[in-house]
Image 1 (cartoon, rainbow, N blue to C red):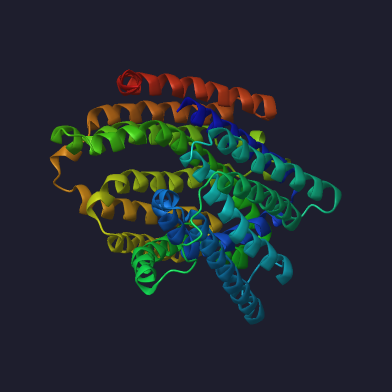
Image 2: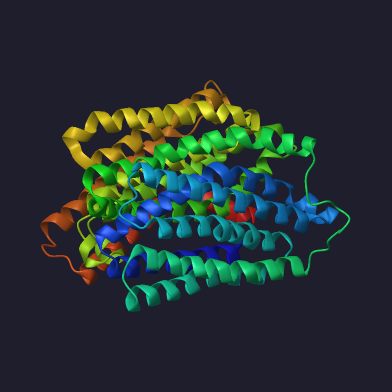
Amino acid sequence: MLISLLGRVLQFIIAFASVRIMTQLLSPAQMGVFALITTATSFFALFFINPVGMFFNRRLHAWLSGGYAKQRFSLYVVYMLGVSCFAAILISICHVIGVFIGGISLFWFVILVCGSLIFNTAIQTLVPSLNMIDRHGAFAVLNLAVLLLGLFISVFFSAFIRPTAEMWLLGTLLSQVVCSAVAYKIFFGKVVTNSSIPLWVNSSQFEHVTRFCWPIAIAVLLQWLHMQGYRFFLADSFGIAQLGLYSAGYGIASSLMSAAETIFTTWFQPQFYKDVNAACSTQRNRAWARYAEVMIPSSLLFLSALIAASPALPRLMLGSAFHDVGQFIVLGALAEWTRVMVGIVSLNAHRHMTTKLLIAPNAIGAAGAYIVLFALLNNFGIVAAPVAVFVGGVAVFLYMYKIAYAGDVNAKLEMSKLALMSFFLTLSTALFLWLQSSIIAQPDFFASLLVCIGIGAVWATVGWYFLKSVLIDKVRLK
């Protein structure tokens, strides 16, 4: 477990260094182009590939033991190629009818989106699967190699050819091509293959896959509309450069919240799954509450820390053209916090929900987000976007909590302790924001670093005081 956590931390360090270098080399307009390309890629990846990928991961152990994992992966590659061809056609149609794609050429848009759909999917499928066949060393090395090689090639292209989003993403794509080939060789080099198994699936198998995938596809499409789809509208309304500034600030909040969430879920989710499968009914019934009692306070710690550090973080993590995006970090942190909360609620709810029931809360969230966006846009401008995402996230959280936990006595949490911690965090956040606005008149890199170190020390102390009993129990269980 500690090796996995160390690997995660190293990945995050490389990813954050990449953001700093990228925003030093690329202009806000190019960051806007970057945001549009990755948003378009996310649409096709989430709607068409993610549900099938979930099915692939769920069945991988059975396919490995049966000797037909290689055949199923080959069929998966054929499917990815089909999705890429469809994506190329749809992007071309959008280009012809005048849908806004940020001024980037159709050729580069298609190459980068379709290339990522194939090779990034291969990486995200093969590399985690190495862990399942006890190739831990290869798993760790490839995770880091794809990031480091991509950073090196992207910096080289952006610095010596031209500083554009296309060149940066081309470097990332080439890294994925190389590392996916290596991962394929390593993974299937030790896998026993039964050549008598046919490549194609029969109608019954196809129906089974479709029944599993279509509700998930609808749900993740609604999530994409809620969390990302509005960015094309922002680019058309406010310009590609303004979108780049917005995406840089929101991206810091999203990346840091995701990093913290990943570290804590890596540490605490295994115990949750152990509890829900325990023989003792009390342990099973209290599994979600035990998990939530550490994850909800932790999410509040990260949320308040991001808000407190929002004036300093751009100077540490972004280039000089992006130093005034603190407001987007604050609003982005709030929006991403609702995503984390939805994840906490849905973790246990899926035990008694069919995949079809995921559609309604996500539909409510997406609809609520767009209603708020269009209601506030004229008066508040681009800052209405993260506010709308936040409101939609709150709607999803409340709906899912109601259908999963309303009236469940086992889901009750220690609210007095949570309220007391929230009070201390609010005071600390206000103090650090005042410090940065009143005392540090012209913050530079080192002043911002000192502020973040101070925030880290204070928040670690508060977190330890309120979570020490849970953390000590976790170590004892280990």
